[in-house]
Every structure is written in C-alpha cells, then in structure tokens.
Image (tube, rainbow, N blue to C red; front, side, top):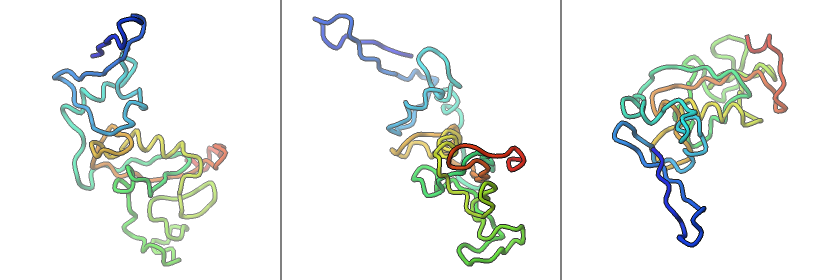
Length: 171
C-alpha cells in the first residue's frame, strides 16, 4: 500500500510517497530494490513480488538452474557471484577444454558471440536481467531478484557489446 504525507504544510501539493508493507507482503532491505518497479509498483503494474516473498524467497543450495540467453552476466557482481552456475566438468583457468564441448574454461556458461568460454557481460543488459531473476535478496546490497537464494544462473552470451547478435547463436 502507498501512503502520502505532506512534506511542508505551506506547499500542500508536495507529497512524499512511502511504500509501507501490509501484513501479506515481505520486503528486502536492498537499497536499490525500488529501481526494479516491476517487482512492486504502487499502481499495480508489477508481479507482486513482496506478496510472493512472504511465502517463498528461494532456498540456499543448488536449486534450479536458469539459463540467461543475453549479453552475458557479470559473474563477479556482488549480488550475483554466489548465484552463478559452475560447470562441474571444467577446471578453472587451466586453459584446457576439460569437458570437451569446444569451449575452454567455460566455468559459468559460454560466449557464442565471441566463440569462447567467457560469458562476461560487456553490455549490462544480461546482468540487469540476471539481477531481476536471482539477485541475492535481503543482504543490504543492490537489488533483490525474484528468487533471493537457490537459483543458479548460467550465462549463455549470444549478443555483443552493442546488443546485436544472431538468432542461430541463441539457439
């Protein structure tokens, strides 16, 4: 629910809008959560995330793997690094294609735009989408994703830094 209070009685048209949770909602303490207006919007144009978080925020553990097919993911991001999928068949930074899939050191996914094993985001769109999906919630940092814990993000980069790519790289 939204409550509006007058900021200055002499300027009656100025209001401060405060989002006050009702008993059926749960909000995270992440400072930039409000920037993801699609999670909770005062006019109802949202996915009702606070209502869902009252019931479930995700579980710590391996959980579900979500492949983000986009511009990659900044897998060093403070709200995402603990959520990243790790290829169990690769040995990091040894310069060898341990799993023999054609990509060397594909630890967190693959980069089909540049044909290598490093899906680091050089555009920010994939990282933004990943934060919406699974940014660690209630840690006092950044934003909260739909699932605060338990989701593993696999970065499948097919778009370049300019945001362009081939459909054939996505499929």
